[in-house]
Length: 395
Image (cartoon, rainbow, N blue to C red; front, side):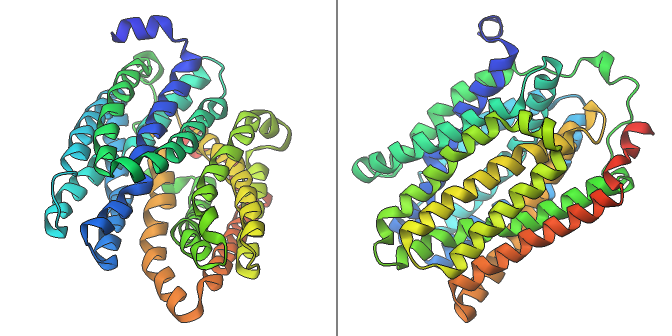
């Protein structure tokens, strides 16, 4: 089966189809699991604990699994095993009905899924470069499938019941696993003379450290937006109708930006693209802090999707070019750890406190300020030439 798929699928399409099925699998389950927990009778505090498990695994587990995969040249092998284990755990998650029973299964599921992004992104970015393909044009299919499937499943699970999402997610993991087997390994000839990846040596690259710091700041903005925008819209008059449209429209508008990201980057450069994306996100978040009209906020949610579509692909590319090929998963895991690990770990409890004390508009203003601080860091590093130095490549 693996050989047939490789023969049928050109390398330029393997990453695109992998992202399509991977994000379809995520869309069947991820947006709805908290609703399922609420139906089981869990308190908001218990649901918050289950949701917070992902952050420390992204921060502490994903980088070391990715480092091991890079050192052993086993990214694809480890990714395939983790996909298989997570499929079993997702199905098992449909069995327990109490918080204490859900907790260990949720922890195991987070441990297996945390390295997904770094490992798959590391494989596909390098495969795209090897075959002169565009990573952004492949990644956009993930945004498309997430938007499409989340809208469809939102209607289906309301009628059929949320238990079906576990079975559907488990079944969709099968094509994801098969497609992961078609992703190309690094040829041994390309890594024999390259320096072994090391987390300690990352500190030598000041440009990369600046990028990680800026990614942490935009991660704060993203976490505040993702966790509180639905609650905010739901509380506005007429906003209930638009809660489901926010994520879908944002994901759809990312697609053209990802498609043309390569062409835009060749004209402006990756650092300026990231800064532009941060600026657009800051404008959208400040609009959320100031406006109360749900239809206007839907417009700015779409604008935020433009910002994300610009800076996400450029961030992946910029990190990938800072070190040799056998560092790829390690660097992507550090980006993921800053973005979806450390930032949510800090902002989830702090954001809740701010919402109670200062109100939800203050949450979005804080996110806008974090995005502006990211712009400041990147601009200073760019002007001082930090990104022109590539010690991990030249050593």
